[in-house]
Amino acid sequence: MTWRVFLEVNKELFAFARGSWRTTFWKLASGIVAVAGVAGAYWMALDGIVHWVIVKLVPGNAELLNKAWDAAPHYGLRTLVALILLALVYTAAFALTAQERLDYRARMARALGIKFLNVRREHEVIDLTGRCRAITIEQLEVYDLRLSHIQRRLQVPSVKNRTVPDILVEGLPEGVRCTPSHKDDDGLRVFVLNFFPPLSATINPVRIKIEETFDNGISMFEQETRPADVFGNARVEFISYFVVEPVARLELTVTFPYGYQVGGQTQVGVRYGRTPTVHDAEEQRLKRSNAVYGENRGGHQTLKLVVDEPIFGLHYYLHWVPPQKPQA
Image (cartoon, rainbow, N blue to C red; front, side, top):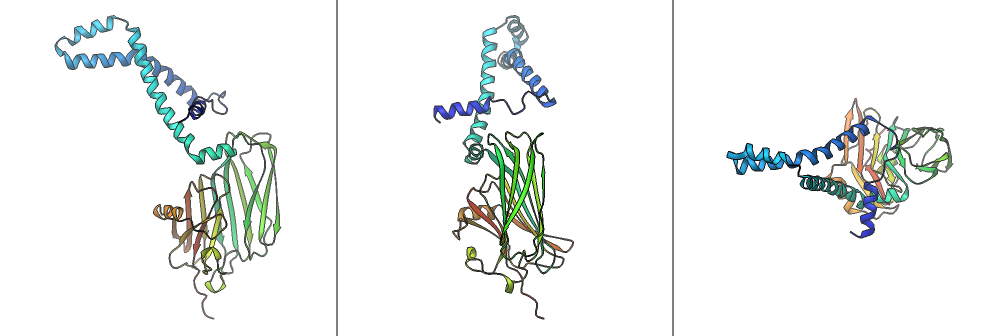
């Protein structure tokens, strides 16, 4: 570890948290505990150690020796023990802070100035025509970045009858307002959220919810499914998310109409960027952690992919093989 990194870790270790001027129960309680701990380390820790050693080594004269020990102040030794205990606490705190500091995901988020704590994309298929209700929920926190606007993208190639989106933004700091808008380009819809004044150094996470409904969102039968080039032109249907910002947790969910069942094994796919290049290591990590699972509730089948700490620059897919269309 270089001297520069050592100084940076200590700067984070001893930095005041945002809003440190605000008194809360936990801050007051931790302050009292800290003061009591220092006093205890100075006055009680050394006495306890010495008394224990005397009792173990010379039990016959323990009472007399303990009284003799207690009669002297031992300022130097008490100070030394207090410093040793403080050094142990500092070492533990430094190790934890350094671990976080050296995690490239945390460093990237801090350097970029923004992190998405949770990104959820839920697709509820309403009927067998593929009509779909799509809900995107995101929680983000902003650091030193002055975030004036963000864009979200949702592309559905064969979409029809797309409704006007319902966009809700919650948790904005006092005095900050958000003006959302959207624009369509064929099957691509771009959502734009403008913040005035810009978001910066948020204390609480900001929550964004976007809801819309459209036709032909999901291909329901294999005969109608377009070959997917990212899966070797196989006829599979999928929902996906391209990670272009630091995200702590990604969730992709699709719920089918009553009685509709997807057969076979639901799978996860991970590609480098928007290319067909498979990222084997990440796919294996997700399979080992059982990141994909399904459940049935009230006759509705749900497929879900949960990814903790998705990698920046990778495209995550939840895909499945639709059933054959029944013969007329």
